[in-house]
Length: 109
Image 1 (tube, rainbow, N blue to C red):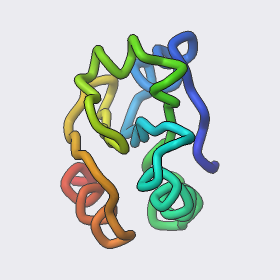
Image 2: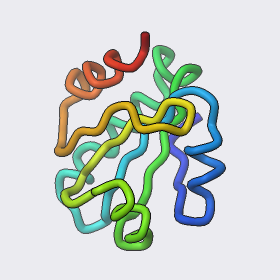
Image 3: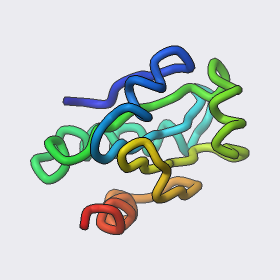
Image 4: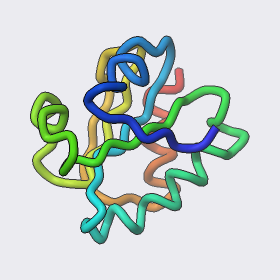
């Protein structure tokens, strides 16, 4: 499974109702750092280490401002990892692959 595009209408089903871990990428098409991190997240989503353990989704903040506001997304990219519908880790800014893996390890216990 690769990265799933979600929005206000599908967020409940894609993220909040999902049992297990969901990595959510809040991004915008005009965001430079978002363009840098997008291929890394796609790589993580399809890697053997995570594809069966974590669901990866992305949300365009320009089209889903209500969701961005609900989760206090003031800068992008912002990443929130949900576990069984509850946010368990939130971090802001571009990371390299190792940086993302370090954040994922915090919740893969």
